[in-house]
Length: 178
Image (cartoon, rainbow, N blue to C red; front, side, top):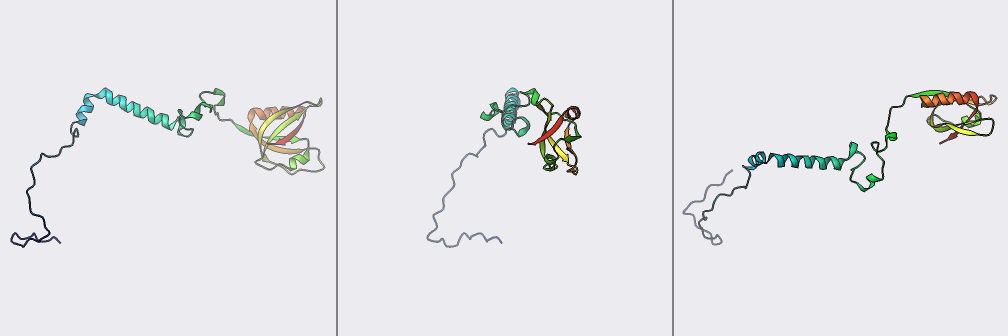
């Protein structure tokens, strides 16, 4: 509820200052508020250059892909990027399952699905070479203790599966856990 305006004949209290007139002053104006758009249109090149500079700064700050950090970061020079190292590009590799007979059945009993193994081919002359590195075990069938060797199913790229099949036909295969 609004209060009633004071009467002109109402007595003035003792602690109230005397009335005075407010001096006349010019209205307050905000500088350039109305003319900024006109100035921006007149200086179009400067506005475009400023917009490009802000965009470039934002792109450098976010970095390539947004998750590896900024290119200007001091550690960025030490980290190789996919563009700098063409061999590091990520390509979709077709994975296949390859059954492999391992010479030592006791070793196969230690394996579980999801484990990573290196498959090593040993020839008769004492030499050995890694045929598959970091292959994922997908299945371990039951191992018969009376049987010589045991079967294990690995998930490997198609080219590695071909090498495994060739090595399994000519040499004895062993696995090491990664």
